[in-house]
Amino acid sequence: MMSTAESMADRIDTSYFDLRHTFESAQPLTFHADAEIEKGYMRYSTYDDVLQLRFFGDSRSGSIHMKSLAGMPEHCVEKEVVRRFRLNDDLPKIYKMINTDNAIGNATRHFHGMRLTLNDPWEATLCFIVSQFNNVKRIRLIVRKLIATYGMEIKDKEGRVIGKAFPRSEDLAGATEKELMECGTGFRGRYIASAAKFCTNNLDLYKLNAKDYDSLMENLMEIDGVGEKVADCVALMGYGNLRAFPIDVWVKRTLEKMYFNGKDKNIKYLKEFAQERWGDYAGYAQQYIFWHGREIMKK
Image 1 (cartoon, one colour):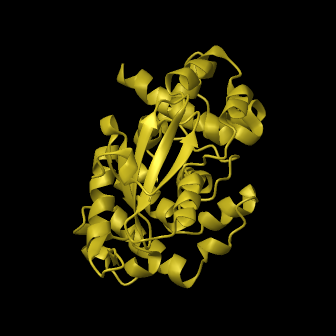
Image 2: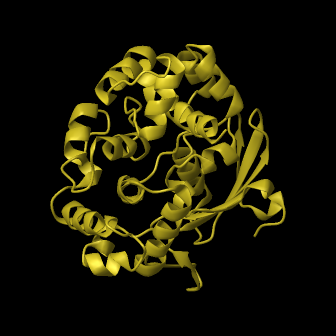
């Protein structure tokens, strides 16, 4: 671990960014990155590198100091971190657009600086298939086991192994359902095996139109094991489409509690409600409602 800011190779100044809330809020990095949040430390693998980050400051003003362990050029490291944590998003403007009432206003104040992340489409697909009928602790165990078992070794310039890469679909395409179940996937092993083969041989996730929400959802739901909720998660966190509004049990209950006096509403109605209320920033509203709802339900 880096002990000082000077140990890092590069730095980005930040505002409206909170590493804890972003890391802990059930996004793909939650499921596989290493973090010591109290020290502002995070380490995570991409497909060909291991990045080490230290965050200093608070959600109003801070800085991210970063280093590539594989020797990636500094400008490439910065580009990756800015993209991954969506640091170019104008969060004050987004807050202004989504703070339509006291309920969500309380959520944005409580989780000030929580940002959506933008992840590789396959990474997001695999993580959210694993997330079905699961909890964060178990999702993390499964995803990290898949990385340990199927991820390719990442080496530094001296040839030393510094970590395992997040496995690509082709790395998993030859795995059997039984082999995947040995990673703790349970019934999800079937869907992971099918999705890996389909995304390797039939669907190029990297050629889908990220901006066309309807066609993106249609294409993603061709994948076995990807229903509307998972497709919305992938559209939001794998493609950055902010029209996506994933609705799981937590979000459904929270919306009903916050806006409909606890009355049951179907998911189609709730998605239409979200689009009318938050429009182009519905995805950000969803993330704050989702995480705020988890806190409400815990209490």
